[in-house]
Length: 207
Image 1 (cartoon, rainbow, N blue to C red):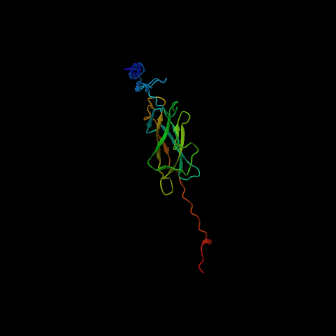
Image 2 (cartoon, rainbow, N blue to C red):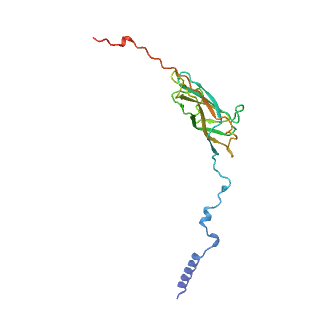
Image 3 (cartoon, rainbow, N blue to C red):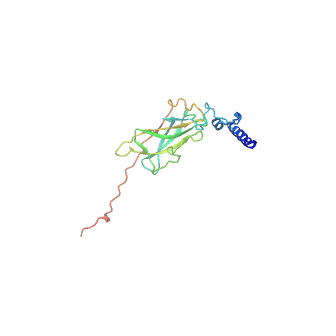
């Protein structure tokens, strides 16, 4: 065998040996690469990153008040609602807490909200929220059993329910059950509609 052929074979063997060798320091683990440090710390599972604040249902809000007839709208009263927690002499909504009105209850069911009239104050039923700076609202309520010459009017009470949002837990109002929770609705007086007199000129004479 010639020297040139031996040299070619030796070169080929060296090339194959170099390609087949592995360097442990150059290997890359795909799993480790996907979890490589990016400069951002992983969130602590004990400290949730959800920005939502605690929300608690309050079936009966600490409110009180009365009602008055709405001028120009027979049979309708304005329910004047006031926040009364912790008591009527010193009502306040704690700073940072908000209470959104989500429902109402009338007992007995002899009044109902009406869209045909509006009170002077902000409506309690349009997403109203009680806060430290907003502690009152109103609702236009139509009486289904008003006072008339033919019937006695029937009074009722109004209650509101809502959702309370707090910056921290526990999210609660203490001793709500022992305070006022009702607005008194008094049946308004409704005069009977006057009967229009008959115009004798409207009668048709027979020929």
